[in-house]
Each structure stands twice: as structure tokens, then as C-alpha cells.
Length: 288
Image 1 (cartoon, rainbow, N blue to C red):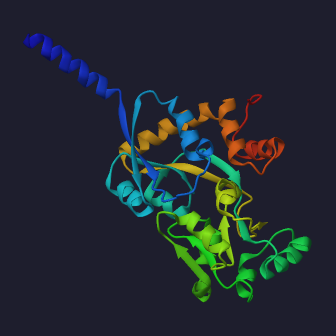
Image 2 (image 1 turned 90 degrees about the vertical axis):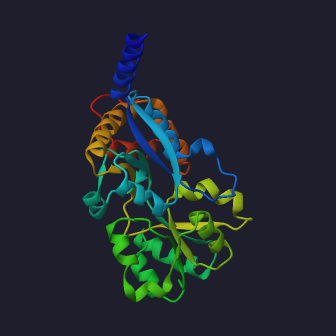
Image 3 (image 1 turned 180 degrees about the horizontal axis):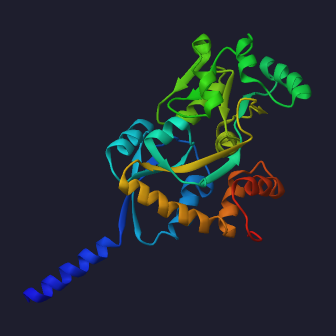
């Protein structure tokens, strides 16, 4: 009897040795809007990536932004998806080599037909892009809405941190961050917001109340947005990142991986998205 218990215990120990645990940090959402969950790019892509990580056990933890960074700093095996890779973050966390997600770049959204929209349309007709710095220096953009604690990329982050324009920045940090900003824009409490087209498309029709939006590419932003998997800067985090790297390298070849990106980037044609896809993901053979 004792021998049987010892053997069972040994088998359990060996089994656990081959199963690594990860605390998968999922963003808390206070959104009350009916959105299409089938095109939640972070959830859809991690589901495909998991297929290539059979020895990793995922425990989902739903957290707000502040709590996520606390756990990444305090727990040895915490990871989060769809994160922008910045120099400051790379000093504190490990990142995957390839991104988990891809989308068209950040754009400046305004109410169609507004004074600001008319001014931007005139500039865009000749410049084909919009300088956010110049726009913020004008009188028509009184308040720009941003998501608090979010990284938008070095150029935009540096601009948004400029003390001379802080009186024009509204930072929202509640659980309904983006939806709240979109509602404020539609109510004219903000004159503009910065967001990815894929995110706006997810909610726009549900809450727009027949108010149309115009969007413009931002000069200070990259034309393509990518989100990486980020893990605690520990030995366990490094091991997990290595496994995520191998899994992503296998997952992005699958037709389903491209398809979820195509659904998420509904404003792009298949040819346009494939062009972006080829820029980000290395193809050594005929893809998909």
C-alpha cells in the first residue's frame, strides 16, 4: 500500500515537472456595449498559440492595468498579451521576438463634419498624414482623449508627456477606458481620440447613435501596430517567453491565424493585410 502511494506520488511529481504554470493576465473590461467577441484579437490569437504549448498550464487572471503591472513585477510567472514593446518596458520585462497581434496603425478620430474635421481634411489632402503636435497647437482641438497608463510608442508618448500641452489631454483610467473615451467624443466632451481602427470598428456601430467619425493617420505613429507577449523578468518568465516564441513561430503559419487578423482589421482588404503581415512575420516558404 505504501509502495503504491509512493509510486503515485512520484508519478504526480514527474507530471507536474513537465507542466509549467503561467498566470495569464487578461484586461478588465467595464464595457457594457455589445461587441463581436469572435474578433477579440488577443483572445483569438492566444487560443491558437496555446495549441503549440501543450506543457504549459494557463491560469487566467482578470485585472486592471495597474494590477497587471503589479503582478508582472511581483509574480515569477505572470504574462500578458498584446503589449507594445518599448525600451522602458524591455528593461523590466521579457518580450516575445515576434508579435502576437497585428493591426493597422493608430489614427486620430474626430466627429465627421466638425470644424476640426474640416481643418484636418484640408491638411490631409496635401500632406497625406496629420501631425498631432501641430494639431494640438491649434485652437480647434481643445481636448484630446487618451487611455491612461497605455504606451502609444516613443514619439507619441514623448509628445503626450509634453508639459506645454497637458491642459489639452484627458486621460481616462476607469475600467471602460476606450468605450468611455468614444462616448465622450460623440458627446463633444472631447474633440479627438487616438486609437487603432480595429478597436474603433469593434464598438463604433454599437454606440455611435448615427454620428459618423472621420479618421486620419498620425505622423508621430507607426503605420502598423503590433502587440507582443510580455512576461515577468525572472527565470520562469524567460522560460515562458522561449516557449511563446516557439509557439508563435508555428501558429502564424496557420490559415486561422491570418483569418482572425483579417476579421479584426475589418477596414483592410485581404491584400492590404497580407502586405502588412509579410512585413511583420518572416516567410521562408509559401504562407497559408
